Amino acid sequence: MKKTLLVATMFLFPQMVSAGQSLTFFEAQAVAGYSDAEGKAIYRSDSMNAPMQMNSIGIDHIQKFSNDEGEIGSFFFQGRLAYDEDEGKTEAQVYNAYFKLKSGLGDFWAGHNRVAYGLGSYWDTHGALMQGLSMQGVAYERDWGVGYNKDLADGGVQASLTTASGMPLHAEDGSYLASLRAYKGVLGYDNYTMGLSFANGKVIDTMGYEVMSYDPKSLTMGGVDIAFNQDNLEHKFEFDAGTKNGQAMQAALYRLGINLMDENRLKLELQTTYLKQEGKGNNIYSGGLTYLINSDLTSRLMYQYNEDEEDNRIVAQLYYYFRML
Image (cartoon, rainbow, N blue to C red; front, side, top):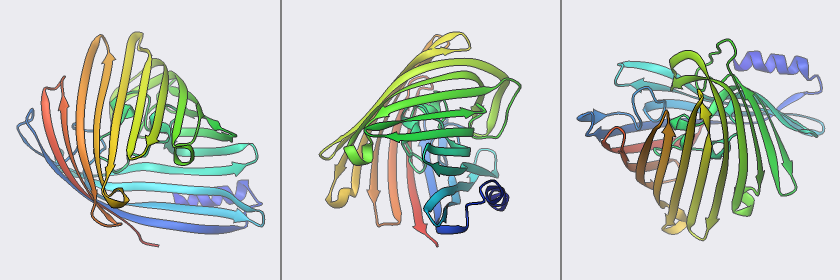
């Protein structure tokens, strides 16, 4: 796949003359816990068919391309081989698989990347146990399609047009998701960001790589997201409202992170999420600890209560991530 994309890129953009810096990381994780609703040990952080988190190994690769004038594009690939204990099989999971072209008009991308909506458009939870609203069916965390990002003086704008299938590459007749997010502030530089998002389309119901329904459902959603850091505290908030399949849908999230110890090696996180669709609401309460054992190895522990499933769940994780090349 990477070779095919590189050949196509060289053909479409003849000004590209060389490959620049590349980074390759290896990841491995061990996940185990207990669910009292299921009455057994579990080897995943979420419900069955959800892609996060399972016992797995994977790679994260970034390849930059440049010419005499500097960097003009990058290729990103991040994927895993995960063992599904419930199904007794190993499955391939693809998270990032896209090419980004840099230009004076902004950055354009094509492939499997983040949807331009809400916290999920920039919040990286790839290795985390606690997830955001996109994992509960509000837009998608990642989807197959094309997108655009333009940095402005004090913020920026993002847009994407995707297949509305989420993790699997699957498109039914008429399925699509058009998303737009305008934001002020960059969290990594300004210690805050706040955005307004809008999404419209006909989406396919999927859970992980499983297609739950092949009949696309109409979706119109708007939302606001806010994230800011204050001393050793991190706050994240999102509220969304709209309709799905002609019925009202609302969602909300708040997460508080508290960084402790030297170099923030220990983090305590508390999160509450609310989702209402098809006239039924559900609250999920989560708490977690993250401890950086060293620069490559991270340990996590999460407790979660799901009201709808009446499930108390505790999950532990060891996450190993280091640079290979």
